[in-house]
Length: 51
Image (tube, rainbow, N blue to C red; front, side, top):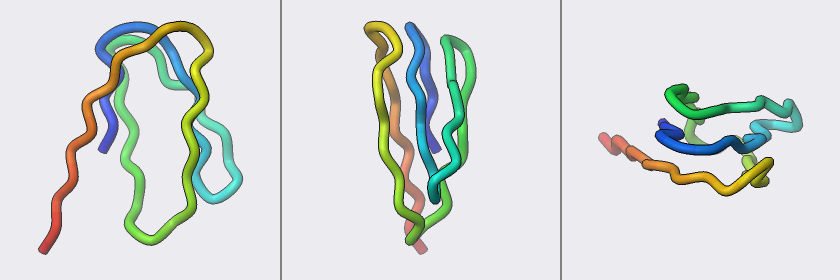
């Protein structure tokens, strides 16, 4: 899971772009290709859960 507490970014998961801005989060499934691109300066918190 990625949370964006400040700014905005485009997070692409399996070829599908998602604009995520301050106060929002997105779940990134395991073993799927992903990329992040800043739309403006941003901060992010990445939470990884492994079982």
